[in-house]
Image 1 (cartoon, rainbow over the protein chains, first blue to last red):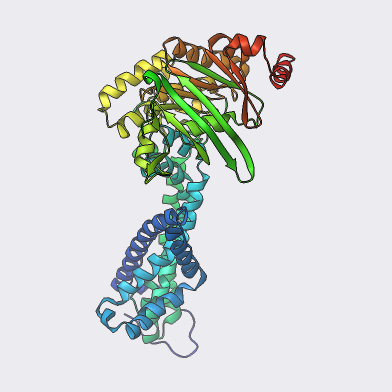
Image 2: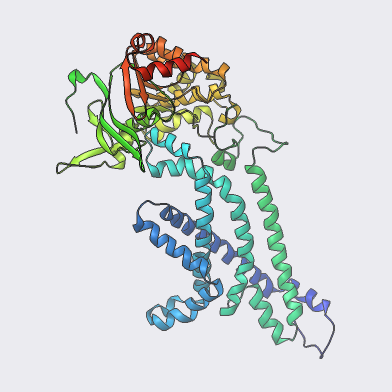
Length: 259
Length: 262
């Protein structure tokens, strides 16, 4: 599959071509993808909890949340990965069977992302007009019900664009798992590249896959944002034919302007 | 905590209510009684505390001292070992579900249609069946003159229409008391009338209402009792004739004089 090159040879496109659709890279791309998706999803869930805790009037909730955000946003993700993979087994030998490259990557990415998502989500929630919660409360809704049915659906409109950007980042951030030997795209390129002295060429292959994924995601992100935007000029709305997404989030502007 | 109220006649009873925002005293020992079926209109300059008082009645604002009773039951607090502690969220929510509140800025849920706005709380707070609620909601929307706008989103409605939907939304909970916080102040003048008409109709039907407003015509025509507030206290109160035509207090006369000049 790969052959060694002579010293100082020019870039070999044929190597790139040979490996572009090789099984190892297809597998690696899939690994990159599912790790990104799961980590981002967990990050959103963690972020929602942390955001709500952060906004709580009880220090019992808000202080741990602030601490969490401070730690995970204040230190490098790379260091967090290394601490989890190499440090934790030293201090807690009992946890060793749970510390695999996959669990480490997923946990580190999720927790790190959770800190960033919590700030995004908190910004989304506070962007919803305060009158909405007051209206909900005045109708007899409790905080949790009001959050679920009134506030969060409106916050989602503000949260989705930055969330899309976060996932774009996550696809690329998975490359950090290479330092603990997880066979995602970057590590696959590194290991196989150094074996056959085609380091550069295989990194090009990895780049190709990253570009495919981030570009595709860009289109999807665009599509989602357009569907959520009420001011599309080519809107065709028929009675009862609203998509799930539109029904969830609505097509109105937030706030209540006087007409 | 039940407080004896004469023949269950008192819907709202505020006793010595004090409310501070930081150092600023916004309510300084306010006493107010609203009888069942009465329409009480509160007037006064901005900053007088009238909106705050209204918001304290349904505990959207906490009070620093005093008591407020809704239909004989204290709202916001309960007695534990002789002391008053803040009541449980569920209890407060339940009491609020029986008090309708209409906001100056409508506060309709923008991601829901007019009909969905109206049915939301009866379904998810009172757990009433959806088809019953929808039927009642449609007739409420018809009552406020907006039956044909049932499936329209708030941002496509005029201010007056939004406010009428908001009133229907509050009425859907079958409240025993309706609170109106400057319900027409954010409306263009030509839209004020349609909202006042709905409020007038509610009054005629016997709803207990506490209305904070600048609409003196409405106050004069519809109110049973007018309360003038200024600088955190009730300065004067009485029938519309007493307050508007024979105000005993200088401050009242000054305020009304300024209003008349407009």
